[in-house]
Amino acid sequence: MLMLIYFIRYLLYQGYDVIRFAPILVDKDLFLYDNKFIYPEEGVFNNGYEALRKFSVPELRYGVFWLYCFKNHNLKIRNYKVYEDTVSIPDIICKSKRIINLNYYGYYHIIHSNSYSCQISSEEKERYFKKTCRYLIKRYYKRSSIRKYYEYHFQRKKTDRFKKAIN
Image (tube, helix red, strand yellow):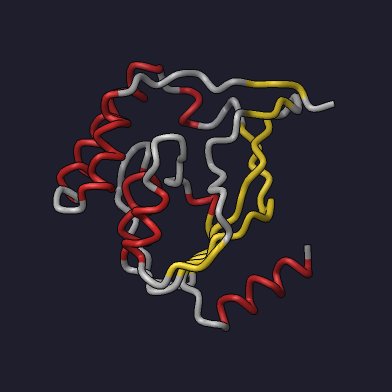
């Protein structure tokens, strides 16, 4: 773990504004969730819009804070009841000058059944999700690949994650 911290500091010192990791998602019963957060290409982006455009493929999810390490201390986080990360991350990425994507499992995300997002009804989640997508469609109207990503997700129906046991 200490090596990872030094590596992150090194990358931030090298001028990266955003470091993106691949996560492993598990719940308390050690069920592994279908991972829609892994961007397959390791590499550097020298423009935030380029990174966001590459991340905007329907099979990928990129709007969660635990995928990233950010250099900027003045991050603007929108005040949403849920999906505040989904609505805030595109702007953070777009304002970044240098982003690196690592295919390194740098984060183990444990899904807690007692978290707020797991407590609200699926209808309420769907309503917040649609609100978030509508905002992002308007926000990125002139960036067609990014806008189309949110249009796609606006149309899709939210489904439960596929789970399999870890052996």
